[in-house]
Length: 75
Image 1 (cartoon, rainbow, N blue to C red):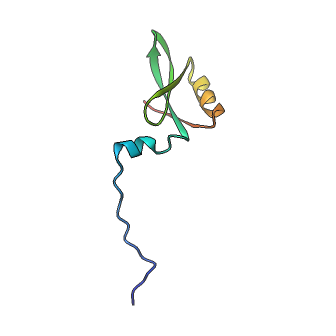
Image 2 (image 1 turned 120 degrees about the horizontal axis):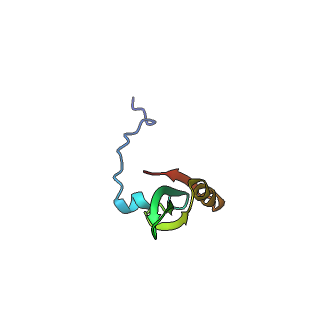
Image 3 (image 1 turned 90 degrees about the vertical axis):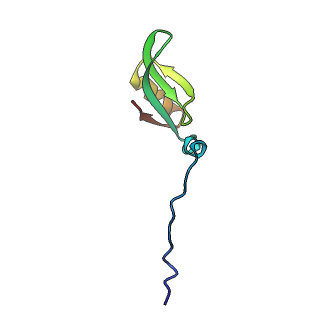
């Protein structure tokens, strides 16, 4: 007897482009940066493009949340 509820799951390979687009509309990454000789916190989309800058980490997180995104710290 064959169990039709069991399936073989093969991991799918994701392209770099697919990985970058994954969650793009839902997350923003925050990391410490220097912009125009000023220390601060850069805000980046999932594809790595810069979408903002804040003078403090707390302000960066608040700005991201105000735009209904989930902030994540990166080093």
